[in-house]
Image (tube, rainbow, N blue to C red; front, side, top):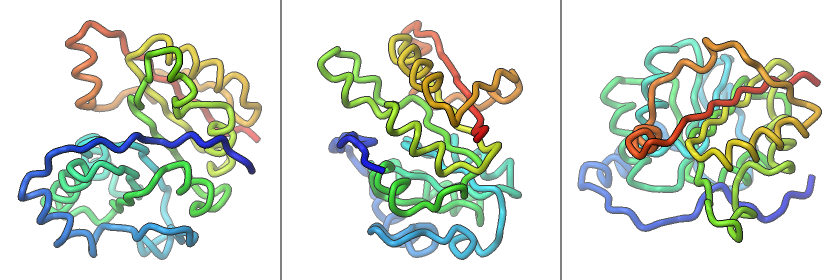
Length: 220
């Protein structure tokens, strides 16, 4: 599969607290996945066979940690490149003694393309990705047809892709992309959209933005 050179992030400098810096050193051996291009054996990584969710761009990790605590029967692999967020999640995972969380500091497109086996995931969540609001930057948006096809190929049949945004023009692009992916079908069950509000979502709500959640299921 050939993907356009769209990355899942733009690396921005961010201040890390001393506690976050210590977490990256002390807790990485417990929770971190080394970068590279070698395939990730999810069963070996978590020490069991269980449903697996990948959250792409988890921010400070509060949403991922809350889900991992509430759903111990499910494994969670978080992908993030901002080190302050990584450190924050590592501290939360250790404080709750979570055994079902792992994190990787690598571009998500690379991870999905070369490190995750086809038909191996039960869920992919991408909550409030960068909307790139200026028209000339729309090509940088993560949710593009090629990316949707890639995600669908990594989901099991019945696995779900959950997207959320507070930027309506991006929400419409997401709908168009998902509608154009034959492997995915829209799921409308309201209970599937119940989730804790993320930090980015709370900021959008304060600004008066509406929030759009979209859930699709792999059907073929």
